[in-house]
Image (cartoon, rainbow, N blue to C red; front, side):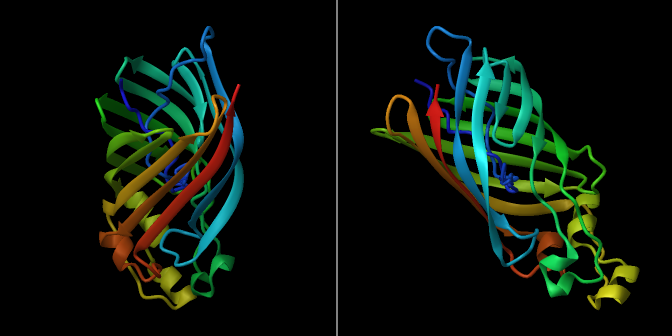
Amino acid sequence: MRLAPPSIGYRSLALAAGIACGLLGFAGVANSAEPQAGSDWKISAGPGVYVFPQYPGSSRLQALPFPVQDISWKDRVFSQGPDVLGVNALRGDNYHVGLSMSFDFQSRTSSDDARLKGLPDVHYGPKLRLFADYTWWAFTGSAAIYQDIAGTGQGMTAMADFLVSAPFGKLLVSAGPGLTWANGTYTRTFFGVTPQESAASGLPRYDTRSGLRDVHFNVDLSYQITPHWSASAAAVIGRLQRFAAGSPITERRLDLNGMASVAYRF
């Protein structure tokens, strides 16, 4: 039997991630569960809470109560977490390739921290997500590209993750490493400081380019309480790299994103 890890939005939330997040962006794979018995539909929903940095590079975390959903039709069309609407263009017993409109809460305002005064606000918005995942036995590899489509200046990021899954009774545990790359538009928006912004904020000028944003480790837990009820928790523990790590905007290199939820399967 294939052991597919539960899908969560990254960070950024990733979450989230994902999302945190993801969302998150947090790191997750496309919807892979089987439809309801005797039905082309699979529907689960319930309350959840996402935890993610107040802004990329912040040392403070914030919590956001948010409903979670896992809806799919014939494993073709789905709505799952931060993926508001997606399509598995190619799919099989152990792989998915597709695209979705994803939403996360990566943003920044000058009121978030006194150090940000004089810097422009960064608003959140929808992103186009292209993804692929492949599972062999207990091992899953996944990759995703996120492109800003709302003109928020968040550019493009790309993620790659590797997860190992194992059941322990009613508990499914998935864990593994991953990394995130960001283009120059993203790093300039969240971590760069132009000469004008330096004069307004007092922060030193800081030029950025594309490069590795972070390396991270994923831990996902899913517990089947009853045939209809389940509980999930996930964490993405990352460390900012390169331009994200060296920015005067960054307070802490440790990048934490998390999610917890309870869902009812109809």
